[in-house]
Length: 220
Image (tube, rainbow, N blue to C red; front, side):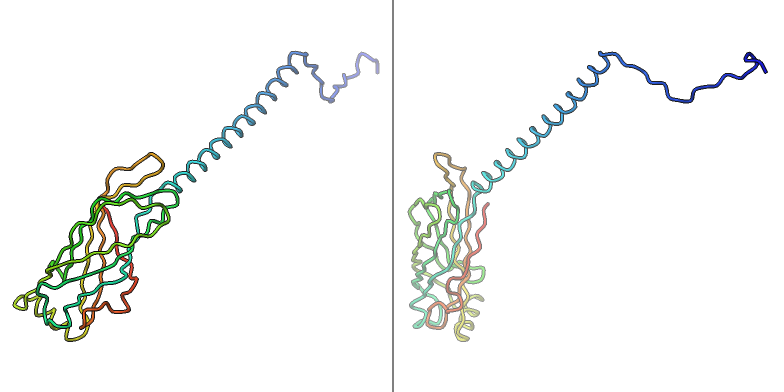
């Protein structure tokens, strides 16, 4: 068999392509660009998270907490001598707590009213405005004169019955306009309502179970 009749043998080895210098430079540039993009994205993500956490901490520190009120003392001195209220004197002490860490509170004049069930039986004169520093407690002392509840009314009959059983539940409502203050910044006015339930015995003194009872506070 002659050499001319032999079949050609095909080389199955992969052919290595030689790339130009420009090709490798382009690949290096792409690799550098990808790494730089990842680094920039990581930096921007870190800055975004840092700023977000900082704003969240600032918001928490400046987010105002409403003041806390507690009933400390409530007395109807003449109740021991009267079966019903007639020009009765009512005295009370309520604590106002500003629990904010860095925020003071401006209180406008406060007005208090005393209710038996749904009927107002007395009111107080206005308390003078005052400013309360952060993390402080202020005692609000008030007197309601000429409290009256006639025995002829339905509430009057229920009042007499409650007094005979030794427990008369009353409600003290306090309203005021307040503003929060941080450094030189002051918030807008908020209408504050404080509702304090309290019970007195037949002698007009506050029952021990109601001492330091928390009052509800809401804004309108």
